[in-house]
Length: 286
Length: 334
Image (cartoon, rainbow over the protein chains, first blue to last red):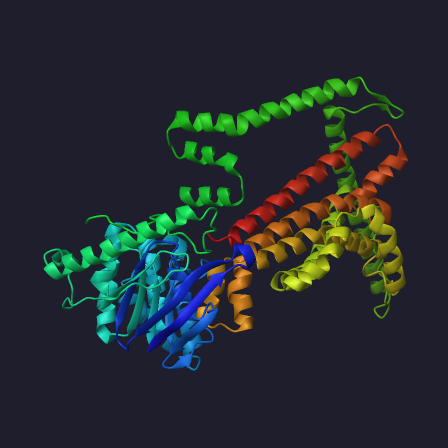
């Protein structure tokens, strides 16, 4: 369904040039939930922006159902890392902005019903007419999720949607997103810096080696039955094994990258935003 | 009720009045009294000190028009100006009453007569002049906005246009109103030839000069605001695939409004400052002309009257700034 073929992407020119992605190959099947996990600054956001059509690759092909992706499209919904709600619009208006684009022929009442349905899907009916500034981080991200889903995309791209939230809110939202995803099992790509989150949610977890010149590591298939319960995961040996494997892999490649970095002086960091406020990938035991 | 009042006071920037509201609603008295002391007591002390210094220093300065007036003389002249306004209004009322009586008499004698009505032609009072000045600056402000907003948006949206226009903007920006005025006068005189008395030429000249000097703040702020719209919002616009028009009106402009209003606020401030000079030269019957006339008049009370005007200008400028600040707050999003 979604395909990345030999993707190269760099920013800047001449000496400032930084290779961000180096020969990335990825194939996401229809209905599959893929998580990509990696250190902050490793090029995860760039990767998802290529898929969303917000950026173009220097070399290689980005394909959607075999067709090259030239720009953003309604069939690929996107949830941004920092919510990106328009602060001068209410929750409902924010969502309606997208709905009106996808369903231009609908009447106002039809659109409103549609918008309210998605707002209630993320349990925000009481806040439909509030401004984003009046909402907590978790609520804002729910709005962002509702906005992406309300456009009924075939693929849902999520760029660290939960990384700015506290652990509890994060856990709740993970379950909610999973629940909504379970209803129609759309294709989904989750970018995250949290291995646990990746294993909990995805069918396949793929580490992105630390940048610059990030490459994808080996895919780890997650054969844990759905629906998965966060509280029960810790008792499943498969979960423990996977978690250990992925973390060991990331730590090893991280150490390698660090050694390599020490050899190169004054290397410019790629132009990707750091994850706020919890940066680095999380090893916190919960 | 209390929360409402406090909100209103905050919105209008009258923070000093908030402790009073709290005091009268029976919140902790000592805290409120201390608040009142810091927010009102200190400024009042400073003002008293300023008046005292002014009073003492003014006594020692002798001008060709007598001793420099102190606060007392200025207060007195303010009252005189108010009285003059009242008498002038009374005269006008008398005039119209007499005219009405005369017309009634003519009509009684001959119902078909069409007697001419004449407007009172007394000299403008101080309050009339303030009003003229406000009108002028308002019209100038509108001119400036009409010019600056579209150009600013275009400049902000297109980097090449910005680069192209930047030198022109930078060169024209620091030009004084006194330099613009002769040019504006000549141009307006050449273009605005249908002087039907509806809008006096001097009014247009002053307003255009105000616009020429004040539009730059709005232009630059709008351009910078549009150019620096949060990248996230633009990404959203792209992902939602908004059309160019929707992107402009639903994303870019709302995102830029706070910056635009900051620009408009500066524009109005600069416009008010420039207006006085423009009115002096253009002889627009506002506060500038009042000052100029008093200066030419050279009576023993002239300097005191000019000082009244100075204080008036300051206070109106402050009020206009507060007004714009409140509007700015209104359009700002958290």
